[in-house]
Image: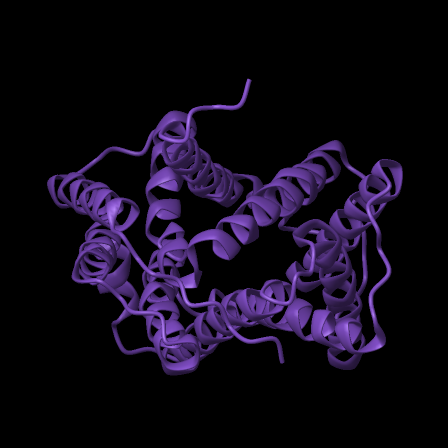
Length: 312
């Protein structure tokens, strides 16, 4: 029997919450897993292998389920741009930033994607940002700052490459936000999330491989179990499951609210570090955790009118 009409909004809300929590949890754990990628293989090459494998998994899944994979030539160009923004260039910029900044400072700078998404949605789509969403965003970013305050303070000390690292991090955040907004516009055209993501990840892999070739980055591969298993986790869960969930959420509630995952992900990472690395919580960090959780409640409970972009 069909569900009563009154239960439909509740079911939609529950599924949106799951779509929010799933990528937040997975991406929070990838901070630990990525450590097993470091060493033999250059970070850029690992990104290329990750998205090549993720694309292959998605394309194979679509083929087995009979999901159409054919797109018009113009749509392939749009998907190539999506791959560049969301899976390629922003990852390269963030890796470059981490070459001279602490990971905590990079996490704080990346959390500003919440504001860029809200601003971009307002400018390009006319989507309003309720006070609850803006307030939640402020709480979330403040909470992330407190979580990583020792690293942030250390990272802001004058030093070689600091300004360039901050520039890379800010540019990477802006590029990722542009990818969020571009995906919202693409999905307004009716493109399926899964096949579109499959192609976009494939194009991103090719773009990063081209970047490696131009920069002389060696395209090595590490056959040790730790590297291979971590690559499988990053491709299957960190890319396929997390990004499909996130982009589905973005299509449903817009880039402004879905971008709040950038504040929750560091919290999950710190909890994972507590379990596996013996991290000890300080007073400011606990207060930061409370701010992020309070901001999460505000953002997810806010009623926001999403204005769909007109197809380009």
